[in-house]
Image (cartoon, rainbow, N blue to C red; front, side, top):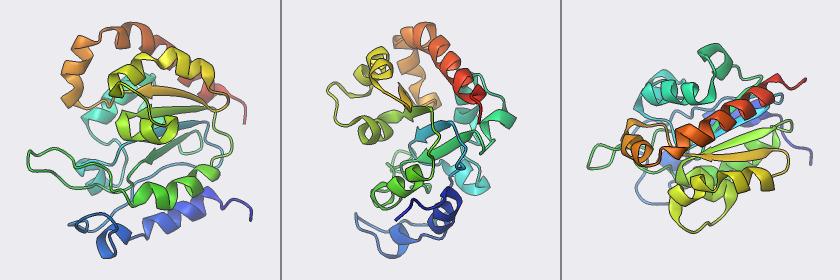
Length: 209
C-alpha cells in the first residue's frame, strides 16, 4: 500500500488515546493526551525530539518554552522559520507530555507511541534532507544502540554525519536548562558542532522544493 499522507497520519495520531485508555507499559497517562507534532510532505528538516514539555502540552505548540528558544539559537532559525511545517517537521519520540516524575522532571516518552506511529509519520516525509536527533531516546531509535551514551554519541557527530546518506543525521543534546552543566563541560559542542549544524540547517532549508 502507498504511504499515507503525513497530514492524515498526524490527524489519526492527534485522536490517539492509547497510552491513557489501553496502556501497554505501566500506568496510564494521568492526564488527557494532547499529541504535539508538526510537519508536511515538503519538509526538508526533521527535529526528532524526546516528548513535549508541560508548556507545549498546554499550548499545543512544540518547543514553546526556553528550551525552544535555545534550540532555535543553535539552529540559526527565527520563530517563523522554525514553525513553518512546509520546511520543518518536529516529531517527538512520544507525542504527548508524559507527566512529571517525583523530582519534578519530565518522565521518559511513553513507550507505546514510537512503535505505533513513527514509521507511518516518517513515511509521510519523503523529502527530508537532514534529521536532528535530540537526546538519548531519539538517538537510540534513529542511530541504533551505541556505546558510551549521549556524550559519546554527540561527540561522534562527524562520523555520523559523514556516514549518513540522504537524509543526513546529526545528534544533539537536549537544549533544556538541565543540560547547562553538560554544555559547560563539553565546550567543543558550541565551538565545533554548532557552526556545522547551522550551515547544514541553512542548506537544508534553502533546497529547492
